[in-house]
Image 1 (spheres, rainbow, N blue to C red):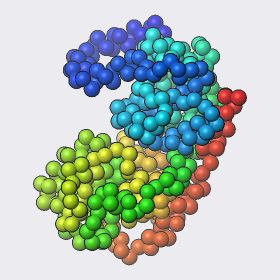
Image 2: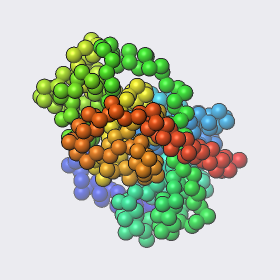
Image 3: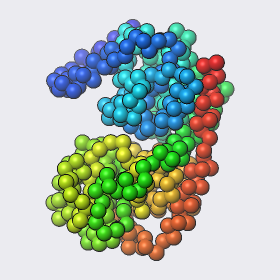
Image 4: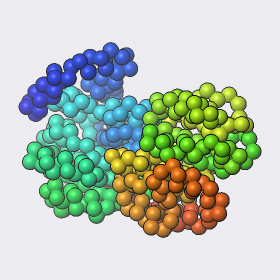
Length: 416
């Protein structure tokens, strides 16, 4: 651990101009304080379950798991890596102990472990932090990876560093992975087969369970100030620049039939998206600045976090973001599929390979390669059998239910 700390400090010295500029901002200094010392009262007590999530998607996928563990009397501490994920977690779980994840320096991680006193640590998906894992292992605190996956890009990187990473991988007691492909990748990283269980993707269960908690459609429409004449609603969900390059040029001239809602993956990009729409002559509004209804508007840019699922619930078409960039690999297909929506997007669904493949093969996900094909789809949409497409999508998600029960069963083994 001393060697790791020295390596981290060496890296810090080599990159100090970047960090000095970054921490001149008060918001970044607050984040640093949170990652150096847990913002948590000691009364959290012993025998907590420490759950770690990286960002927004992982935080959202934990709702049902956290609810189930709390209903069984378990004390939960949730740590999050990214600022956006941390902010969302604090809003989503107001009664929960939510903290920023520790910097991977041994004295920092030791401070977090001493304060939290976990009986079990659960990593959602996959992050390898050597000091964190080593210290937990030294204290004989079990670690469990849930919803595990390894992208092709990450797999190549892990294989290259396998001799160095092997003891840290082996320090994790159990791997609950999403599918057989990921199981094979973990095996090729020399994880013992007895540690790996295929449990499915917990996001399937979460999408199904979240439907019961949706506000009614009229409440969603009122929140978005959709007061004009009825139009088909098209939602660009969790968008990135490449998605917008395809999506936006199709908006002009379709305001009588469609209303377009853009929900960017990174909220801070919303003003720039709205400005771009304005330059193109598209009647648009930024949600936070909108004061009247949607009369005369063609597009709304939604610049708030945590409300995407309700917006999807009133959509006629969902254009899935991240699907035009292979490095991103698409975002959560389970949510629009569970809602029975017609889903459109680019060719890259490698973040959700199983559900993506099934939806494509059965016509519930319509891939488009460019703006021309997207415009053609909008023209043809009124003639599609949306009810049948929606039934296929819902069936695909229902067939993947069960990951939550599988994960809980294994978690309870460590807590017994």
